[in-house]
Structure formats: C-alpha cells, structure tokens
Amino acid sequence: MAKAVIGIIGGSGLYDLPGLTGAAWRRVESPWGEPTDELLHAEIGGRPIVFLPRHGRGHRFSPSDINYRANIDALKRAGVTDIVSVSAVGSYREDLTPGTFVLIDQFVDRTVRRTSSFFGAGCVAHVAFGHPTSPGLMDRLAAAAQAEGIAVVRGGTYVCMEGPQFSTLAESRAYKAQGFDVIGMTNMPEAKLAREAEIPYATVAMVTDYDCWHPEHDHVDVAQVIRVLLDNADRARRLVARFAADFPAEHPACPIGADRALDHAVMTAPAMRDPALIAKLDAVAGRVLGG
Image 1 (cartoon, rainbow, N blue to C red):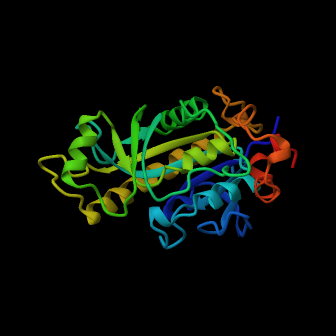
Image 2: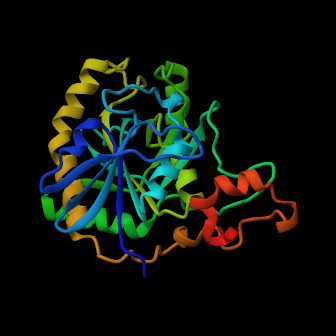
C-alpha cells in the first residue's frame, strides 16, 4: 500500500491549521501550466498533508480562471493520495442554513468555459463518475466532525455554475425546483480531474447564504458571505486537522475504486497515441500508460 498523503484544497484561512508542523511552501512544475499557487507541505499528528490555495494566496484567480488541470496534476506529483475540498456554497434548502457544513455526494456541472479532462485527441479515456465523491473519505470526515462536536449534513447535490457573477433569480428558482441542495463555482471540473488522476475526492461545503431564491434573502450579500466564512473558519480548521491526524498512515483503498479509475478507461490503441500528450500524462496516468 502507498503512504497516505492528504491534499487539502481550500481558502487562505485553512493553511493555519491547529497542530501544523514543518510547514514549507514548495513550487511544483506542471506540463499543464501554472498551478494557482505553490503547495504548502506540512504534517499534522505525523501525517503528511499538502495544502493548495484554490484561488491563490490573496484570492488572485476567479473560479473560471483557475487552472484546474495544473492544480490536480501538481497535487499528484506531490504524492497526494486523497483530496478534501473545502468550498463555500449557497443553499437551496431552508434547513441548510448559513453556517451549515454539508458532505457532498453528487454534482451537476453547469460550467461552460473550463477544460474538464486531461485526455483528448491523441489519447481518449472515459472514467466512471456515477459516484463522484469517495464514501470512505466521507466516513472519515463525518467521524472527525463528530469527534470535534461539529454538526455536518451527510449527502447533498452541488450544482456548479460558471460565475463569477451570482445566480439570477430565475436561475436560483430553477435550480431549487430541480432539487439541487447547494450551489458553488469551484468543484467542477476539479472533482472530474481528481477522478482521472485516480485521487479519491470529497467536498466539505460550507453554506454561506441562501443564493437569491429565499424571499427574506433576495440577493447574495458578499459582506455577509465573508462574515459567515470567518465564523466558519475555526470549525473548518478543526475538522480538517482532526481528519488529517486520524487518517491511516497508509492510503486506504477507495470503496468505489476511485484510486484505480483508469484500469479500463483508456480507449486509444497504443500505436495511435500522441507522444506529446502521453508525456504530459506521466503523473496523472503513468500507472496505466507505462510512464
């Protein structure tokens, strides 16, 4: 079994985790371009973690401008075996009030500008994505939350919009009518790329607002969103730190096989594969491509 290395993708406040030792920022080169920032390597309770600020330190990149492929590739090159995403979301349910933490189990992708695969012309692959988050990671996050006395809701559908603008009222009402639970701007194609890179992925969604469908909250107030995020920051840090400290030293096999997602996914015959693309796939798919 491989040594477990936990990747954390989230906002700037999360890299000030309790119990963090040996922290050092390191640059990782990726053939897919520049990641949004350097990676913070550290340990919690003797467990190695790698933190990536999704928007860059200082929040320099909008959701549509994040280089998701470079980010996931950089984490793979850093040895990350499991990813936890911490993301702010709006709520479509009265009971998912601002401040609620939700462990997402489904996604609906409504983005239009983002490249969502490492593969393409020259090497085609199709990975299973019916269950986009790892139930094993969700179990451990739920246990960490219970140990820290943090209430979480397990299960929910996250619709990912393009942004950077928030929803119109018509969009908000439509998404609520379709039964979606929360809305955000960042987890697609991040989760898809993690699956192609064979890294089990889970999302802790932090509810900051009711989008604009709610009659008593008819628009998203950015100042209010920031206040809720700040209020959530300590609980988010404690949750992630406990999760990391209690994680096994060796990577546990993903119950849904996300860590072997490429076993039967590559369709292009070896003789027809583009050497330039294969070279770029060395970290993501070297296990099955022989790199």
